[in-house]
Length: 222
Image (cartoon, rainbow, N blue to C red; front, side, top):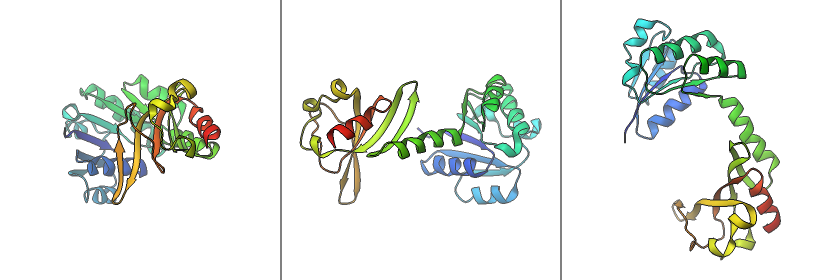
């Protein structure tokens, strides 16, 4: 279903977010005070507007209460603006406000003024990069919560040609395969596996389980 997303702040994070959401077929209204950034965004979003979103009357014209999601993507250059915009969007009845923070203090403040969700892109990327650097053989490991992670890795040779039922990965390694990416002549297919799915050479397994469990699997079976 096509969703309406309001992105306020077109720095590197906001611009990338607006493009990614638009590329997935959703309706994006992109907003920034900088006319050059707005002009750039106008080439790929449905609508781009240059205005100061901390102006209550200007923000009201964007009808945040009618959007499925409002993202305050304002970064370090406008900490006060980020707080004001988040608070105003909540006061105007926005259904779901996602606010960007760059440190733990901002995370707490944005939560206090009403953000439904607070994200810290730099922190999240640092955690993901740490997984890539520390876990050899694992393409990526992303934390999902305390002690839980989603990870991707190329299937070790020892499990190729065997079914997931035969491998008993949940029992042996505390991981569950939730998807398989398999190369074909035109790219890759994403398979939603079941117990009867056989692992092929070159498959990338996407698993959910204990943090570090995917690395243990790769080291023991690689």
